[in-house]
Image (tube, rainbow over all chains, first blue to last red; front, side, top):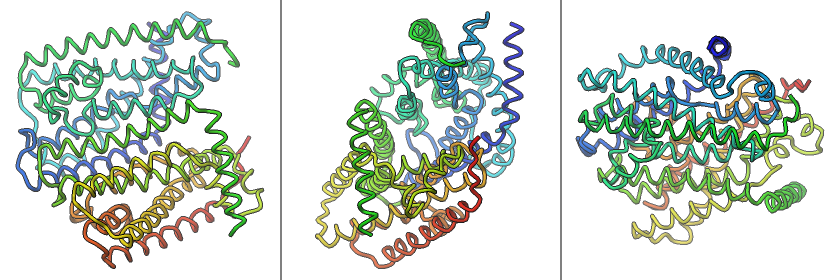
Length: 266
Length: 262
């Protein structure tokens, strides 16, 4: 355990050093939020409610999702893992009693801790400006259950990124796969629009896919887009199921990938 | 001029041969682009399930606008993206020396090295979206309207190209800046929104200061409401101004290039 603690601490330091990456990402997010604000503001100009939610509630949903992603989103973990496999850096882990998944996960947690805390700074500036638009439900149960869903969501997001990283054992370039999956995730994770706006059958279908639990599910708990407690418990059950499946897939790909690995460089 | 055409044709030929060699890559990237286009179209259709208008634009008018914006972006992807993306990387790594040694306009040589067939192929999909939307709206544009629309798309391409060159040129000053191409994508998101949706400060920045809104709105307006000199002139002026700015900044950046290889 101690060794992963060190990996975590190194991760913390390196993320504090590369603040520039965070600034760039924060800057893009701000503009993305402006697009969301303008588009949905215009969509609400002719109607008071969309899918039973006001403009304020929809804007809150997008803001919560954006902030949450800084805490749990896998950002470039897939590329980092891919890079380490390609230039042979993983060889050192094969020779030492270190689990590569746990090592990478420790760094991921450290990175999200840094970006999560850093995003609170611009958020403190933005919230007073947007105060009139923000509406969150007051049920207390939403906080612990939402945070649990966020933790599972972090595991799911990291596992998916890890899987894509491991694809490097088979393919030279993973960028195409990553960007392809980003398109699917942005729709089915509810980043383009709240998933409850989908036709009922499509929404039901989405609930059985892992993408739903990547971003939409925790955001929907916090912002009241999922009303009843029963649905939340059921969702957490399916989410946990996906965590287990994806962790197993990670182990499987790692074991199969290593058989092909030729340990060049290092 | 014909010399540059010859150079471009040689690059295009080389790119086609490359595509034939890496067929899987071609299919993968064509699918990636197709998926991202679908994401945008799906978002529009879902919103219109719940409302009839976005800033006064009906569903198919909006589809025409988004299709237009995607069309310009596909052309950029097809003709310039790979070359300019590598330009940023080359500036950081020092491989850019290779372009400096070539006998020709540096920006031209660096922008036209690769042509992506997947982007060009997907531009037909975007054209299909625009044609479908026009058909659903019962539009019957004359040949002159279509020619004007095409010209405006070219102006739009010039503007997108300039925005991308400007973003990439930052690498001359900040060599550690990775992912600066993202600036272009972030700005391009705004071009899928109708002009009427922008108010106050947003209108000042994205309609008047940055050319992101006029790029898609001007051609879409031409198809929807016929030729309007104001839109056409605004687009032409923006294209010339931003191309000028891109060339200027690129050359200023060039002076700072110190061949950072190790």
